[in-house]
Structure formats: C-alpha cells, structure tokens
Length: 95
Image (cartoon, rainbow, N blue to C red; front, side, top):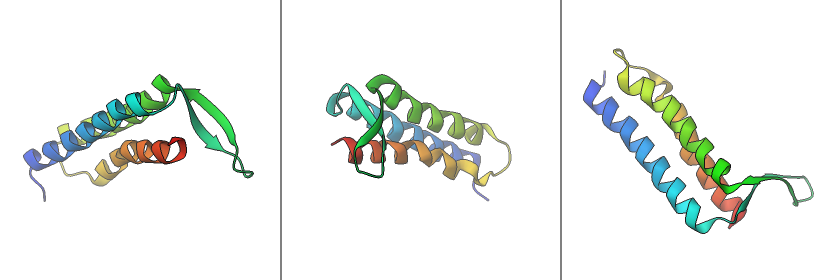
C-alpha cells in the first residue's frame, strides 16, 4: 500500500506535467487546433487553442485531486494521465 505522501507526490507530478504541456502548447500550437480527423485524413473539427489546452488540464486536475486527498489507496489515478496523453495527441496532430 502506498503512503499518502507518495500518492500526493504522484498526483502533483501528473498535474505539473499537464501544466507544462499546456503552457508549451500555448506557444507552439496554431490558434485553431485540429481535434478530429476524418477518414480521408482531412481535419473535420477544430476548436480555439484556449479550449483545446484547458480541457486536458482540467481532466488531469479533476482526476488527480481526489486521489491525492483520498484516505485509502485508489487505482483510478491512472485515469488522470488521460490529460497529458491528450496533449501529446494534440501535438502530434497539429505539428
């Protein structure tokens, strides 16, 4: 069983990585970010950069904070990695 301190550290690490990726995205991504690609390979949906960058961060935050404050061990922390993974996918599609 992991200690509360190590769970808190891991959750803060996930939130920190998400924040760093979001800040990096602000400087390197275009103003309209491609969020969906059709079967033809063409962009079929876009959204403003601010929304495309804040959503993955909020997902990481919403899933990491409850884990950080939980009294018992919770294996759902891995879902908080969804935010950083979304950033990576967004970078791959748009750069």
